[in-house]
Length: 377
Image 1: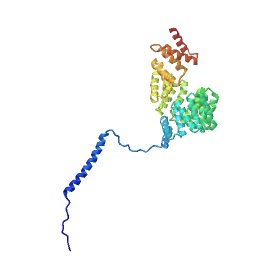
Image 2: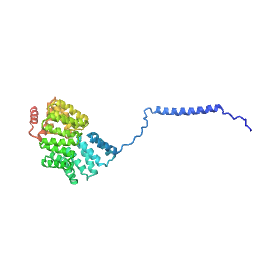
Image 3: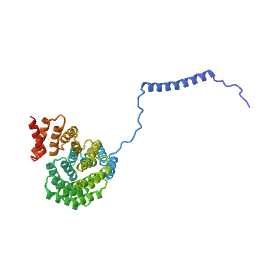
Image 4: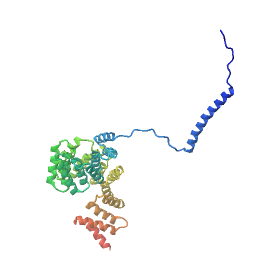
């Protein structure tokens, strides 16, 4: 056998070292480049981890669940998210409108409900909610026409009859109001709005025991809706039964602590019960929870008026009037607050006192205020 005994040529160790140094240098350069980038942009945020975009269906499921749990503030926000993703979704707009009305945002509710109607003008449900929003926004004539149009489209829609009942009672048409409310619960014995508005009508007509029964039936259907407890509490207030009214308002706060109506009603209940100091606490809480809850401004003004804090009373009366919450009482108490302030301000007081007398000429406090200013001249 022939064996080739020639040696293989060995590689130069110098070339190996050169190659190794080149690799190390390249790695170092890459590392330095990365470091330079970090140094040039020390506040540069890292790329966020991509997250999937939520669907309208997901928000809709949340909205329905939140409403079922009585969380109307959060439910309204979820329906708003649905409408943002699906601008042509009239159902989401309708629900958001209803919940905003329940939150005391009547003007906003009208805008939302009108959008729903514009998208689907044949929907009796859209028209019904618009009529509710208009009524709560004190647009009584428009509300009546809208509710009747809803019933033209669907004569068997219980909620439309319920809202019509509330509109009739607000317009002082008592007989038709009771008939409409009774029709609502006959059409649908599980209509929360039907029983709630029947309670409202009966309360306004002085049939308080029946009103309490109707409100309780609404509560039994959905015990997590705070505004139902508020309605029941108002019946007890009309009976001057503060021991029963105040716990109902507290229940409203407990089931829906992010809604201002419970705190507001609790504050007003304390005012009527002769505890303005406790009222201020509840009413200020109402405005902390929801600065847009207009009724609380007027109630807080009355509380400060009773506490003789006339500077604060003027501030909150004027805010309430600007927010379309004006009452005869607010006008003359605002005028008197200007008189009781230091220094007395008759020029500002007179216009409000006169406005109160234009509405009701038989207000002795307003006349006394005007006489006082006349003597000062």
